[in-house]
Image 1 (tube, rainbow, N blue to C red):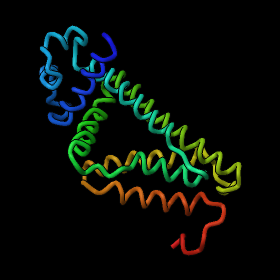
Image 2 (cartoon, one colour):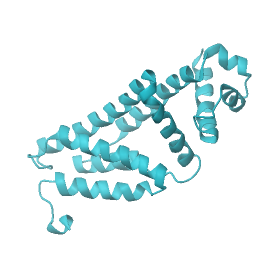
Image 3 (cartoon, rainbow, N blue to C red):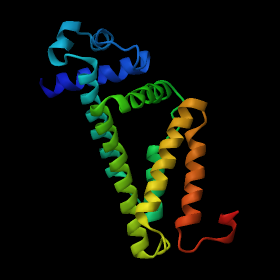
Length: 199
């Protein structure tokens, strides 16, 4: 399969996922979105699970590219930019529908080793990126030297993951979660925190 065909099918998978959700999605739905025959999709993928394994790889490449592009003149700015990247407020279609469908995909992970392994890669790359930023901040003296970068990163990844789930389940704004997580990071990471930041 050439790159153009692969991209076309994977982008059609994204659109079909937003429209139908994971549970009721079929290869025929994806074929319709791609303006192809169901047989042509079957030619490349013999099951929805195999297609989704590649779709998750496709999303992972995009996710890592986004994390790599996060920048700031200080570690604090870089961490805030990362929060802005992973906690964008996507209430509008298809953002909300996509997050809801992805929650369905995540629910399959305990029963699908392939899904679980790929989703774990998302978790790992986010953890490592946050850990690197915090470690750099500790090294330069911007963040408190008592902070353990790995422990702080573990907490923040858990908070971000929970924010995504709460956003889907309760329709709470991720912008609000972004604000809370940013405030928490400032209070617990910065070497010199203004007194009003702790209130």
